[in-house]
Length: 175
Image (cartoon, rainbow, N blue to C red; front, side, top):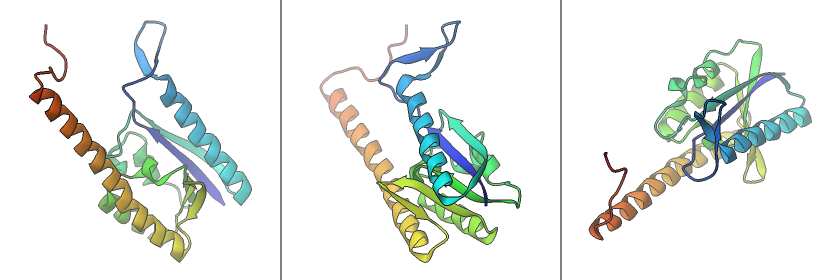
């Protein structure tokens, strides 16, 4: 079985910024560690299941909430894998999707194309979309991933409204 690993991270606001030699911000230090950890987890999963890794696809600084998989720079590659590549491995479901409708449509397309999707470490367990229970679990988790993103947005909005009501400036001052 030949497979690809997909890893993605969204940049965080907190943490130490890693810069290139010209002082340009590249990413937050913890983000780089996160993507390396995802890839390592997926490689171990593939080794244990006899999946030959033929490619590692990374999307850096991409939000799954605002950018569907097919619109991400490298996410598009997952939608046009060669027929010989039958396995897609991500560390967690939310690395691929935060929108349940997008996830369900793409999972169905992959299933019809005989592509099997695996999540190597979903809360300490792995999920294989090649089984009925795996497909049911992913549909449930897709709705939870979208819910989680909605809750984060709601909490952020509430906090910002509260700060504004207290007279605090929100955002950056224009100079």
